[in-house]
Amino acid sequence: MSLKKICPMLLLTFFCCQVESGRTNCRNPSSVRKLARGLSRYKLKDLPESFYLMDKLRNKATVPPQYKGSVYVNLDNENTTCPATLENKLHVCPGYKVMEYDRFRIPSMMLQVHCKCNGCLGSPDKACVRLFYYTRVLRVTGCNEKGVYVYDYFWEKVSNGCVCIKNDRQTMPRG
Figure 1 (cartoon, rainbow, N blue to C red):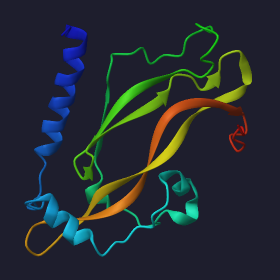
Figure 2 (figure 1 turned 30 degrees about the vertical axis):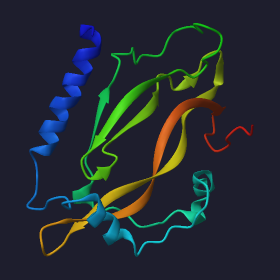
Figure 3 (figure 1 turned 180 degrees about the vertical axis):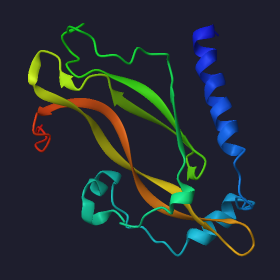
Figure 4 (figure 1 turned 45 degrees about the vertical axis):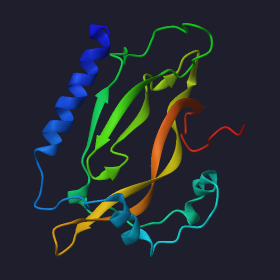
């Protein structure tokens, strides 16, 4: 394994350890079965995940601020600066990959894409914005009287690329 691949992983491990060191007096359930049993009262509709792009279907509950704590690490030591010209005629809105770690979420690590540029290359009248989808995660919402974290399902935004839109940032292209 090359040093370029090892360094980001060591950095991510370091950040995870730093975040973990800020523990509270609460702990995770002792088994996944207990976690699932505690969540059985939350019956989710059996709809495909893509249906949850509609705001009305996602829960509007908010995560308590003490249970939010993401750490972002640039994975591949990718260049994060916007190129001056189109490099391959395909990426008018290039992005770079970032690993997001949140100890209060299952899964704790998720890959996100951030945009390198504010404006689209070759189209100064358009802006680069992240393209999102939603995925279901488990999030800590509290700590019970036994000192065990309480989890709940949430739909969380995940950015999977960058796209060009009109500069007013209100109109997404239809495709």
